[in-house]
Amino acid sequence: MLWELRQYHIRDGKKDEWVRLMENEIIPFQVSKGMVILGSFTGENDENIYVWMRRFENESERERLYKEVYDSDYWKNEIGPQIPDLMDREKVNVTRLEPTPLSPIQ
Image 1 (cartoon, rainbow, N blue to C red):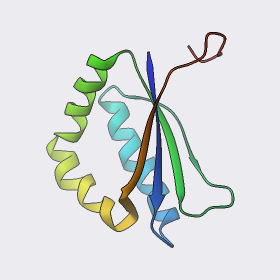
Image 2: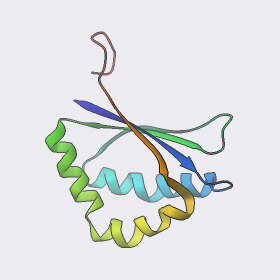
Image 3: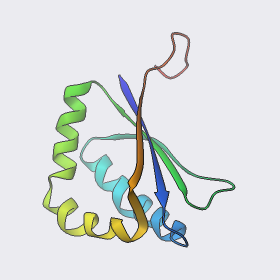
Image 4: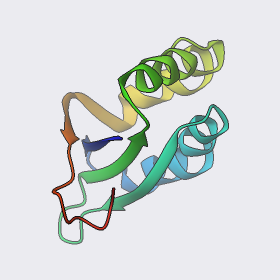
């Protein structure tokens, strides 16, 4: 298994709109394609931070699911165009995580 921790910088005043987009469109769409979303979070004291985690069985599954999601017409025409107004893509930070031997998440 491999995990992604994705950290986004949300544009000023756009947090609620971003969360609605994630919860009503992005996450359901990605789940419908087979992605496993472990959770999503906003910063308690920082209105501009949004963090979410995804899990993949292996690298080949990750590559396949990325292609199914991000190369789809729905992503390119419906979801993708909404993102730049809400989130600063230049500040995206994706960290791939490996659990420690005794981590409960395996």
